[in-house]
Image 1: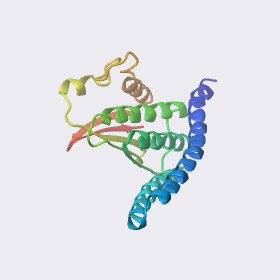
Image 2 (image 1 turned 90 degrees about the vertical axis):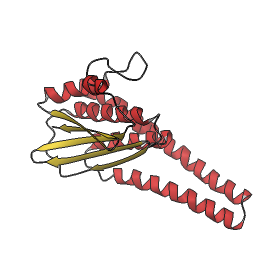
Image 3 (image 1 turned 180 degrees about the vertical axis):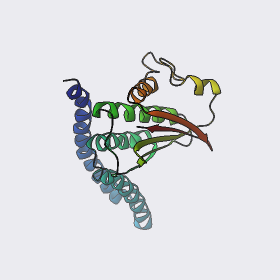
Length: 208
């Protein structure tokens, strides 16, 4: 019952995303139709090419999701791609299909990756460069989840406390539990979290 309850939000989100895709397809057609009516010649051509290129890039990212074997990873990445587009975040991902069997429950995997991506998305929202990268691959006998995001700078006190319960640099009563819960799940399954900084990018590396 607990596992089923954990899946319900994901199923609802994917269903809602499909509905939004249908609605947005109509919006894209309307946008193209509007350009044809108000623009002429080279201006029309340039604007159409630019619009179609941006649309194609997003569609290609969405289509890549279909080739991810793990349904949990596929669902989460699909949802976060949509969110990234809305929030103007440059979100890229690479997920290997050559992974070992996960040593954690599906709902725990969902919680870990969702928490890490939520944290990364929130961290870049007030940045000029809003970049988030997700890599999932096999390293020896372990599966590795890497989440990277751009930062301006970060205090040592933040690094020391970011996995503590209730700690957050953002305001809000429900903040400060995502990274804490992630650490708890990872360590309870004999995994490890590694943290590194390089060139204004913070990287969380989870080995499970």
